[in-house]
Length: 468
Image 1 (spheres, one colour):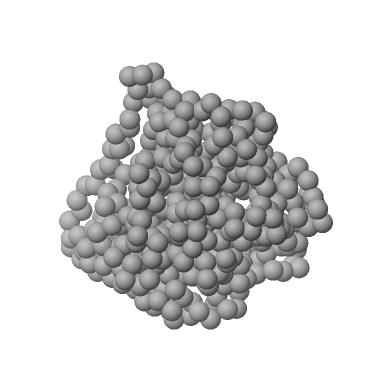
Image 2 (cartoon, rainbow, N blue to C red):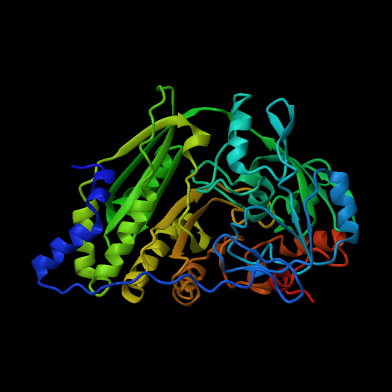
């Protein structure tokens, strides 16, 4: 047994050489792909480029607003050229933030500004990574966190961002109230008792109702968690997944195509003393998987054998620390992503189909597939509205083609009753989405009430809602 760090230190190239020598196969040189072409930094009208994190969405806003307080934002919105869109970290892969009208950044409107018992009033531009230590100062924490914590609180709320845990809902389900400013500069408050329909719509709104400026966040005690990471055969991970979701506070696993393996991660509350996490090897892990692809992409059997030599004997790794320090992960390697939220009873069957079709049709894929479980809630456009859902997220390196998401993967998700993550790539529009959300028409009515002129609607949102 060796640690994952030692296995990756040995390197895929060394393992690959051993397997190739044993098989008598020839090594074919693989050059890294060039950077995808980037749009010009400035367009002919002199407007500066905006681009999302992965690089596939871009725009040239005519105006940019970076208000420091709500009055400044309200005044700016009244005269702002439409469409008006808010942006946080740009971690959505869809065109939710893209606009050639007005782009609004709330980065200067950040921080915890008040407490009412265990409910924190948080300015909407606060990044999730900064919110953890700010809440911890009061002995409090967010109930759960997503895989990445670079997003703004408003962005995470508006897209239904979530973590994993059978009894833990997405971030927006832990809201006690919201403040937003409409496109005509009105300030609107809502909660479960005051304008409850607006609250149900605003908790996952895609930024279509106005600009969220404050959120009243229901917090939890700041507890230490024990994190455990281990690798095992994929079939074993699938067979034990339901048991592990029931047993652990947080459980997720990553199916690793072309290896027959899966990486499991659990987090459980503990009173044990802190135990330092080992240095992250996620980047080295991805690089090893990419090298295996480059070397053995022509042979699934050799690729799986080399992966077994590289990873099959690694031992579990553990860490103990406050939850906000462990639940999210640094993701410096860029990618594009499609994620659907499926009924729990179809999630694992859909996953098996996804892995099978990738291994049959797409030997270029090397990113692991993330598998999570999320509790239900009542927000009108929440993918988890009406009951729990199981998510399956497929990734492609940012230099690789991702058209297979739509051609091969999305039909599987749709056949199994999936709802798309609003910030991840998908092709659904209008009536197809309306069929998945019982309150779709109710949401559109609230949207018309708050923004009758459609100033918050970009071409992407008009297409999503099938509006003129």
